[in-house]
Image 1 (cartoon, rainbow over the protein chains, first blue to last red):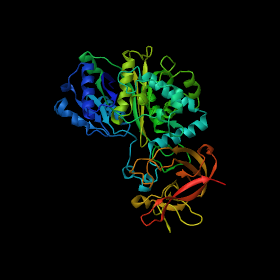
Image 2 (cartoon, chains in turn red, cyan):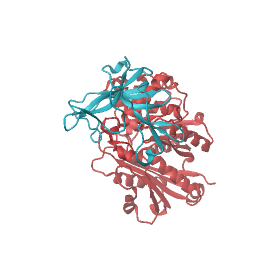
Image 3 (cartoon, rainbow over the protein chains, first blue to last red):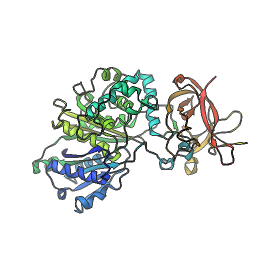
Image 4 (spheres, each protein chain N blue to C red):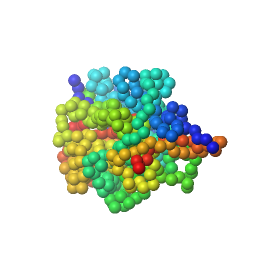
Length: 380
Length: 137
């Protein structure tokens, strides 16, 4: 079976761009990715694209060229980008296609998302009484985790401090201003124990990747990291997810644990092989918990690892080297592809100012409501 | 002035209120709330334990967006409230508002009791009740 390579990667800077639509940013990212690979839109045999709040992804077609290409819109919550990537991966693995693009973009209004209970199959009273906020879910999850595994509020602050420090070094990030841990810890409390600076914000941006089979890559004289494993998994009984009026007493694995295990198995590597990781940091606590859910440490080890700077640039396992969602914001459709874009930069030695030394395996994980996770493992 | 429940079939009213969950007929799994419509046919209603143990918690510090939030407070009169999950032994873990004046006193594992609490006023001035848990005396 053929291998899948990422031969081009493009991004539209994340943040706020009042003069541009989400679609503008998606089209920009595709053009950047095509130019990065040195290929033309007319060569694309497939496209998988998604946007949560900025319209249909295939509205990019008139701008990129009406070539008749197979274009499939992907909608999978916060894991939309990761799902588009997985779709492209299987398209090439199947042997049907050799070259294509995956893209994601978004543009959200400012402030917290306001979901409709009916859209989630939930009764109206749940939203009416103020229980339907994603921020509450993350806070509840980390409160219990901190109590069970001895994680301190300072560790949450250090995660955010690192994010802003790394973000300042990434050209595509939104937040460029370092913020110190003490300021983060004492900023406005949003949902205890999480403060304002510990949460990411909805934002705007676009990201795109050009995928090629081994054969096509050689034929065109291209190169790029190999996609060694990619998996999406959804929630099971006993997992704890956003917007849950009740939970099973018997606890089960999270979708992240399931997707992570599947991706490691496909890749034939383990957590110890990973040189750089981009993991979902909707808020500081999510990064802490996802470190363990992705097998990158044992439950409770985060306190020591983070305090010792092991996840900073220069540490044993740098995490969220572009500042993650905390520094880039979260345009839902683009977020998962931004992580892979950053790993591509790292693995190709192009992450100037934030470059990890000679990384071989790059790991990415995007998590989203209502309980799904997408993991990708790249090899340089 | 009387009081009305925020939704039918969510809890029993009266001196000793109970939440109404659903027990799935084919595997006895308990969920809350009791599913409605076609899905409801797969479950039988079950009155849940009024006492449990705090499983996790947080505090809602800002007024949630409306919709869906429908409190009759506004940005200025909104008061932060605690919420979290309470494990009802042998049944299910339910999400609820938590009634306490001292957010810092909440501890995972502490015993909690079910109460009904006024959430807002109905058009006729009566209280609209929702459910909550408060630390056991």
